[in-house]
Length: 429
Image (cartoon, rainbow, N blue to C red):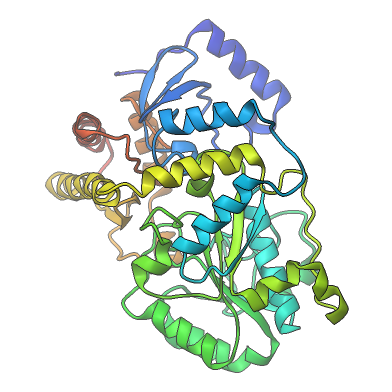
């Protein structure tokens, strides 16, 4: 596909979107592609253009779009009811699967989104520790809550551990409640925990931060220093849960936190996420904690929604099949290795970073170890790269290639060919 052919129908829809929705978007992707349907590893736009999909709904479609087992399970549940606002068998069964799979999980509480899950995990830690301050890492993404938006993508980062407010509408007074550390810098992180441990409610971290792998020993040292001072450690595994392994990043990297948040893959493309962790911290969600002044009310119309829970159960059943993660990692490795080879052959400064199930290309000659090195990537070249990929039938977000079980060898070969063509069209300076 040399150019994206846009039909008159899609043109009209684009105009309507911009008239009705800020930026013509639901808030996630701003590329004016109106998606009509998805199947397996592909999506189609309203104009009929077909794409290999590496956006995957920002990750939830790890088994592919419209997987027959997931569709059939959801269809059966739809006939029995779509929401109850009460406990039901599917929520219990999904909680059982999470506790069985995830090392830190002793109790589970469901939410409707990752943003809610991370906000409530932090609140649970505050209630448990009876402290207010939170330490997070510069560039770490924890949803659209106030803590998550501190120092997410600062243009002029202040000196550590000061936080910057990276969204309008957040009271400046909240900045003092968040301390910022550089990812992968265990010396500074240890120093901050040692200095502020008596004020800290928790440390929250993406064990795999956006696209940045933890350096050898970083997560282990973070676990040691937080344990030493009894500061709860929260792993934000919205992305990595059930993706890096069935037990998530904590299994993959061999480090167990006190709490974690799960989303995306855990609900098979439906709106649900979860908080899981040590029973003594999760007890705050139990009304019996009211007598201790530590009760955390968490009312949500769609908490543990039966359709989402059913989709999650069906997705996890697929992920438990033999050889699933070997296939997922093999697909990602093939793409990553080919991308590195092409960048080297064409002399384009770039780094292929991440882990095989989710990775990206960053147009920089710097080694990527933290937010500030990641931010050295050439943004203009990335934008052109994404536009050219779209024109060659590759669909993704602004960043990240998410890999699914539905991607096959034909997809891999076509993607590598498109990548080689597109990189050859970039300005190499």
